[in-house]
Image 1 (tube, helix red, strand yellow):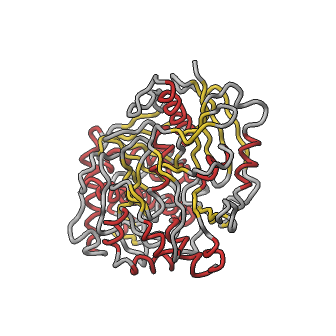
Image 2 (cartoon, rainbow, N blue to C red):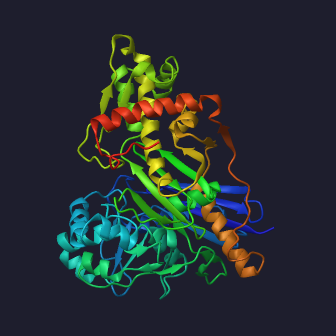
Image 3 (tube, rainbow, N blue to C red):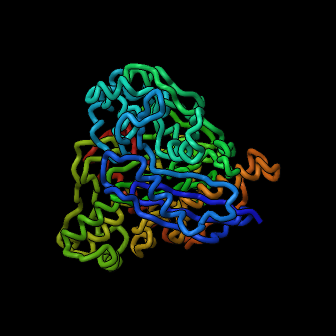
Length: 483
């Protein structure tokens, strides 16, 4: 039996799982918070190392043969010619580059040009937009910048003793805005467009490659971003989509090719296995539930869920378009939410509660349809986030999303994905695994919900939503309703 470890360095903590290489069974775990505010937009990367050391204390890594690193995405670390920090890292939640992202979009000729070049349109979180912000707001720091890495790249580099060679993986590279998942190559011209000059970029490793070996003989795998690691830890594959229910929402699916979306609604990431993860974001998910709970005086989402279940599918004709913070899918940045279908019989708390859940799920179904219309097959949906445990979500989701819904038990999926990657790289180095065949670990324990006889009812709810959406926002999806 071999032993590997996976670590997840998020914006708030480091979590480490130590696993059996053959089965993926978790043998032990470690945890430590980061000694910084998780909402901070600028962070000294040394804080990540301090947290890592604390999480691994007490002999946690004893007997471990290989480590995989997953980390928060979009944290940009600028390095000078000697590999020293130019400034604090710009974290993924830094929104200051919104204007820079818009400038870059125009500078290359618009959204379609970016989608064709690198599979995504610049967003404030991405490295390419942060470089533009740095050049405009801190020109001296920009001039000193000779190399750039992201969080997981930096941690791998530190674990290996800061070698001359710096590496990344397809997943993290695909989120920079200057690496194309379709071609597998960087676009240095886009780095220069953003920063004003060329810089050293990390070598992009394949899914089963090793980044190197420590002097103590510990193999370090390529590593990846948190999203890609979580998908790998969940065990999703072709035909699977993952719907994340946060304040905002996201839908991603495993696909065999990168998708260039001229409308810019799809961000084309690469995954941790050699495939692709097209992602569609919505601006509103659980925030619509929380707003409705406050409106109705419900003290928790659980109370709102119980109230919603007193209503019936279709919420007595009430339809909530949950565009409370504008919307990304469809692209309606200045829209507001809409409550339609008010009649005397529908003006009851339970119907509004039900409409909030149905509106959130219909909005996410819109995002799923963006992928389906581009040829992405979706046979089942994994629902993630605390709201996935709510009975009202579980009751309505299969019929509205039109597919089997899987709600995995809570687990450290990003750390598990990093550990699985470490086991893969170790197996390849030992000749026990092929470079194209990851270890077959047991999938996530989960509840499974089928659409069943409610499918027709759920699709009727969906059509009711689409009718209102297209009446209030005609042409939002190119003039045609999704289905």
